Image (cartoon, rainbow over all chains, first blue to last red):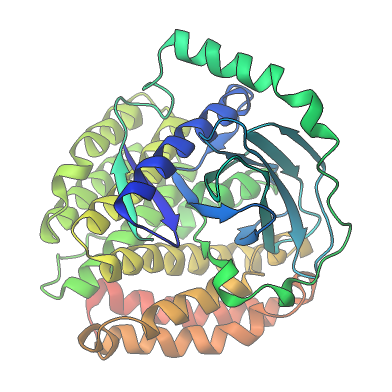
Length: 137
Length: 284
């Protein structure tokens, strides 16, 4: 099965660990897959310093429910993901943050561009690899 | 998209053992409590404050995401949306990539129309077109599954296979460093999907249906993709015409979703229909 990772920085060593982060992100998605969400094979990934944020843009459709799941493989790190609309309003229907895993659900009230804002909250390393996937139903 | 890789097994999660899953589930459970307090997102942010390098490009939705919404909007006459005939495999690789995306999107229409013979025919076309651009291997299993599941009338399964075919083809192209052709496959799918969507929206106009056309960032993204392609592809007559069409559609879909009118849907339909005709039959 082909998996595509969208990543900004791509040195070989980093990719290896972003792939590990992706495995954890898919793991975080497992409960939602079981609830009937289709999990996209396209994924985002990269590395970030503590408190740095990245905006991941997505085209979402009113009528669908979405879960965004983020993870890192780095022990001791914690991270977060939240969804904003194109005007910058927080639109999470719910969210959770559990150490190296985080998730946010959105049920768009309108169709359009949304932004998943990902952030490393704390980490034992300067740079923390992360991966983000989403599912819909 | 700079990187693609394959995971083992058929499903996303099949590479994990039960022991690993249990361990990871435990990790999710025990590490949560303390971190909950650390994450209080602001209610409002300024997206424009993010430097360009900190904003990642939009990922093109798979057709299923749109069809999942259409399922909830009623029951259009999908059979009337089906395209007749079988397109010949072009010699032009750009048109082949566009046609491949087009045919995969057509597969979704055939699924909605529950036309198993057409679905199987389109599954075979996917294989033929993939062969023409050297990614046949990536869709052999998908093509067979499409046929098997169409015979079983497992429409949800067929949809998943067409979605998978689209992503597998793109993944294989990226492994071959054919990013541009990969984008053209996505674009071809989007063009056919938009043509069908605008037709449906016109035939049974509703605000919710029209709102599905509100995809401004996606249109801009495809425009930027073409702009960053090599000059040979960028100057390809069909690709160039598609870029013109995207620039005409952009201001229309950039409006507030609920404001897209039936007349505007018709304009978008006419534009996309025109270029799709050329994708199928070649440039006039």
